Length: 493
Ligand SMILES: Cc1ncc(C[n+]2csc(CCOP(=O)(O)OP(=O)(O)O)c2C)c(N)n1
Ligand SMILES: [Mg+2]
Image (cartoon, rainbow, N blue to C red; front, side, top):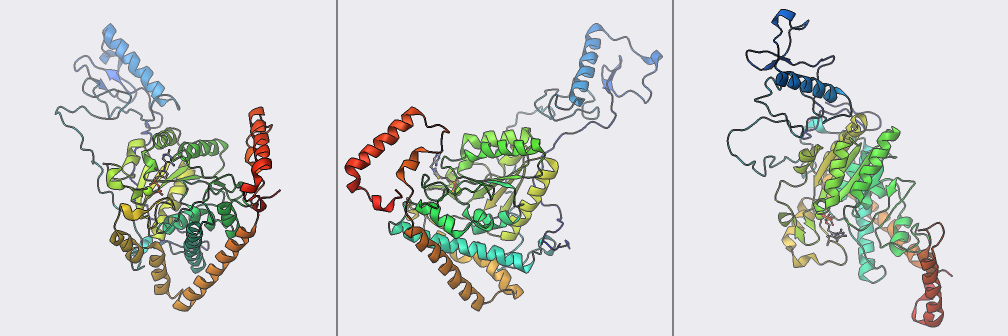
């Protein structure tokens, strides 16, 4: 049984990450191991102490050149930073004539024409800790989190759900311009956020509000951002849900898909160079994983050996495109080994499975400077955004299944009820008080003024360039002439 510490952390049995070989190091103290014998024209390991002078063959010029090349190559491969990460050993390549020597692959020759099946890695299992009724499946995987922490997970997940309902409705009533709900994906946010250190740097896509909420971002600021009011740190210049918070190490969301991936890798590389004992976590949807930036990010993270956890939320859809039309391989986890990433697939609706996988990936990413890929399987219960109507491309029955039978919040609630940590009364009380908190923040945000429109032009350049000054003056003139057509009374003067 794993031991639980006071903080709730525990020592893990190794999780089933799909492994990829890192440097296959030569044995310590190894010397260029090849000696040429005349008879076989094969390279063999010299006996300890080296071959006797009498036994030494007289190599031809060509063979001597080959031997010299081998020795040089061996030295190069043993020099850190030179050549591929792979190291050759005599055991692997006893015969240069029969074994491939290409620097780009570690493989044998094949003498039959055979194409590799696309799904060599297929049906990657989905790691889980809890079943749908909230029972722990195998006790050795139970993270044994203390009650207070489990309550925090549950309260964050449900608070996020309540905030989503209210902001979604307020968009429908025309009070805010846009919104994206997180319904059904609360377990991926909160399970992963709980497994991170507070100073680990988060790069999100846009559907990870629960990560920021878990870090204590106040409801007032969520609302201020969505309303674009004077309390919004972004001064109303971003669409709703584009949160960001320097103090909580959460990089501001940007809409173009996957741009966060190479940025996150760059940040992880900087962290590695600073030896900062921190990790970067980069969230993205399975749809964003089809972007070129995802490839670039994965490959740079692997080759530069960066302390980063790639966290893919595979929620079944990229707007209206189902996963069945997005890829032909086995999801996103199957891509990991191809890039050299340690990879795992988890049940994203099982908050403990997400927690365990992220905790271990984060620990090893920092300790070993290597990137990890987690594919969290989940389901987007809401429409993609308020600009989408998902009834056009999926059935109500499909959505109902996830909402009623496989929801991360009800699974955790079952667990808490099973343990006697929660009851119906507490549930009712919490639902009521959390709704009140959200409503208060919402009403306050709505009452506040919007930022002065002139702020549209600031904060990009230290000194405003002439073209922006001209545009700012043009806006001012426009509002002087036509101001009565705008709700200027709602804007700060
Ligand atoms: C580069 C780019 N292309 C297209 C879009 C439009 N777009 C916004 S979200 C989205 C779907 C993304 O799906 P996924 O990554 O699976 O995330 P999910 O919405 O499912 O959480 C698309 C195509 C965009 N924002 N950026
Ligand atoms: Mg998706």
